[in-house]
Length: 241
Image (tube, rainbow, N blue to C red):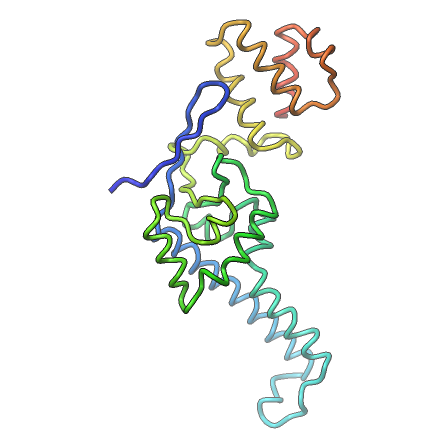
């Protein structure tokens, strides 16, 4: 059975199809990430306990742990375990080590990299998705919805897609793009430059000026109007370097 798809339309007229990740891929990514955060949290707890007590002697009737132990051992341990997903997803722009291993990542419904606020909202709703146990609400929702989304995805406006170069060209080319450039704008520039020769002169000029007006704040409307076609193309290419 083929995976459901989302078709994105760009201003260049090229449609991009994104394949939605199924429950299996979603679950696999979560299990891998769960083991990673468990290992990280347990490692901090173990090392902190050894440093604080010279070993784990408090299990054998040694001195009781004090406030500093909870502050420097338990608080970071809980922070690592509970904040793993929101922190890593923000830093990796919608991905995690588990998602990379499963070949999936998070995008918005327009195919963009999610904002930090969207990722935080998505993770806050893990509390709901995890109810009553073993992510039963989240799994049930993902199975029953056409785009396999859980409650957190609905609230944040996100999708989990298969990160495949054959079916998902939207972000495959952005690794060399200017990191300060909006991902969606960078993708549109890529599409326009690839189709440059196939478009008529007026269309590509209008599109180039439209994109530059969005991403290059140093150019006024008058300056954009004065730029010739070769200059417009050169400026777009420079933005991706």
